[in-house]
Image 1: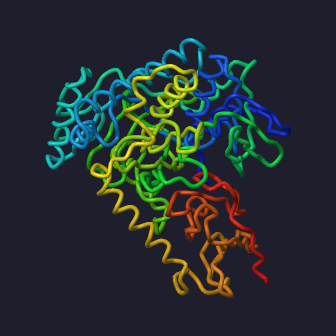
Image 2: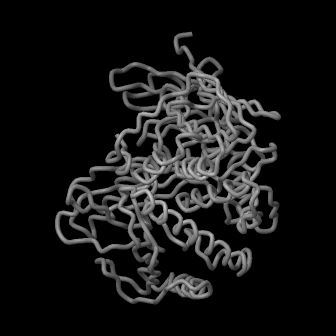
Image 3: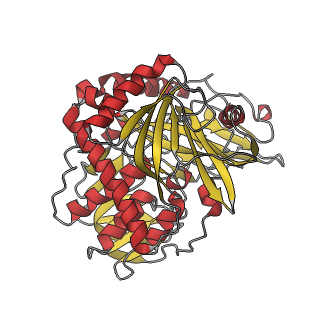
Length: 499
């Protein structure tokens, strides 16, 4: 089983599921860092808020994140400078810094036990092939007043050609932070519901959100779901990817405080430590790939472990997990009002979701309270940037069109149920249907339609997490068809394989 370190050590929350029909000022779909920070800020400003979460608070992407907070970005500040301009890159840096500062302020104000600490962030190259990247990022950091310097060795046992060190960044336990913040939302104005998946949104003057056992009526809706639920044109400009993580106890030696990013490693790009029960764990993250496009998901975990053991004396891997992110075509997130009036979205965070989730909440709190926000235009969700987006847009959407060719006969994994082994899932052509077939360890067959309920792309089997993943727009489903994440609102259709 794949289990996140953060989810494993955080206490259960126990919020109820929705069993009634209520009316609020703002309905928030999703109880990760975006949704809960939005609920906190809005409820404390006097707005009546309802949060609808399909699972548990912090149980989705937030609970599967790295727990790192930094002003730098995963696609590099100098890339933002070259694709956009120095002014835009400056706004990105300042807005991200403001988000880290808000997290620190909230932790201190409410004494949230989430191991928040200020630590340095490092970017390093193992050979001189990536030295130019380090040098460009050094100049970009200096442009915006970040406390940065060049190094030629690191306090970890990896030889480097060059490295950049940026002081005063941060890390924390993201699940503990979000659960702590949820407990401090204004109880007079905020209600949080777990195990309450939204399966329909009726748009109108008053939006109506339906869950299995209740409804919420709201003038405003925030889709804090990492990608907007339902069908939006914006989904052609954000691309779903997965990344993998492991956590193992250090048997000897110590790992210094800090966030370490490798520009060249094949299987890891991020290293950090975390203390639990007087033991220090190494957290290793990497293995980037398009959702639904991996031949063998399990090998990403194996490769992360092999890579880490080259440098560190580790015990068994106690935790392993993966998480989803959405790459924006033009390099910046989309935060703001959608084409549907008074429905707000926040997406395209890439691997910087913790920072952009908090920043989104700051923007939403201002927008819904009629206040100006200096970052709104930078992340405008309605922007049109064909020149900046063209390369990624064409590449990614050509791939999506190729995925739709899988509806043709002869493009499935198997032609018969007998070809599906125990513990395995395959797409099977059966009586003119494409079926997502999983055979459990006891030999029982679980059969679903292989067509994603979002836009009918054919799903793919994820052997590491035993899920059905859609390579077109990133929806993911359990073996019983229930939605895990992504834009899909409805589950995969159940099929009777004997018919």
